[in-house]
Length: 553
Image 1 (cartoon, rainbow, N blue to C red):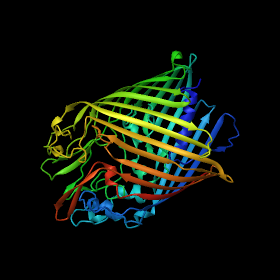
Image 2 (cartoon, rainbow, N blue to C red):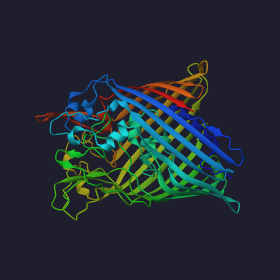
Image 3 (cartoon, one colour):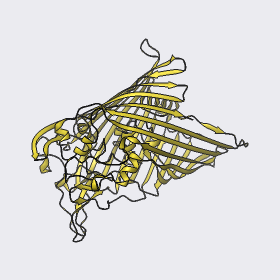
């Protein structure tokens, strides 16, 4: 019995459109001859090379901002910011198609960060790395060579009185709901369901979901009661933090953040973070009722700890000096529902969810903790909504085929339940008394739009398919109460890709960032200060051109 997560036509539409629209490395299976028809062994390998160059001049108000000048001055216009090789290897073993195991691993090396591993000493006395040298953590993930195991799990399918129970145990990823783009996932029932590698997403264009999701040790199960009804559950056995671009690197948002830098600010070192715990739990039901034709309905409940930091806490351990620590929120819960269907040949889906005890944007003026004191950040309840559509288009005079993915997300604050005085909004935080949007202060509501359009020309040259992926994402209105969505923050990417014999893929791409910012005048003798509304405004002068080659074997 086959587990049905989506109607068959809808699943085919989504798979085809996303494969074309979003950068991905296509791996071909190498089937091993085991001499036993019951034993199937498949080994896939993908190697990818990325070269990238900064093509924008520094904006002086951004470059002279004390918070991110090391990242700004690490590379100049025309400098190579990526010179990276990535390897992904995947092994799948199946016995009678009823049980098996999966192993995958990744390796990388990037020559753009040099043999010396030095950060940029922009301002004397303000370096966030000891002796102005990248920490071992930053060197590992940026310069390498290094690697890590990704998937490592066992799976099995059991027949139970005419039903089927599918089990997985070990390190793997599980994502529920209908979200397509990463920004939408932050407003989905899948929020913090898996850790993500934002560091690799930024430094390795073309990395696919298998590489940018960090699997967790967990047990997951799906019970297919009948062809139209299934139940799923999960229990995690470990907690892992998501990775973000590190301070002082090209895509670092702030020089002192997060796991790489030794200091958050001069004289204030990083202490041990307040991390999450193992033991996330979740259940969901997928139902395809006969009266709704091709539609499927999902119901979800999850209780979990966040995989990303919600705020930075200053504290004094005993009578020692001031330290900083990242705080990862615990005991968040989500209740949600989704629907997915086909309308006029277009795949359409929507989700609505309510999040309880979720971390909200915190102002920077949290009090320094005394020994034994433990503030839990700003917490509250929020509503989340997303809707998306996936369409495929037939041959026209302009293309052979084309795909379009559009996704709209919405977030609304229900109420602030903890530490309301430190919530970063105009009604609470002193820092938001004016210029609320530009200062990144939260609003009651926030909207975000993402779309990907990809025309394709098959056999444009002998054995070569050409495509032109275009991706655009933008915060339409408001700054999200939970962060992530910022009004005016946008990214635009256009590429020309060539696929040769399904093994060799070349892509030349340009990425542009834009966001709201405001020059606020001199802030210190060291330079000027520019207030930016989120990462897209910080990246405004870090446009890049990238050249990618990927080979599968």
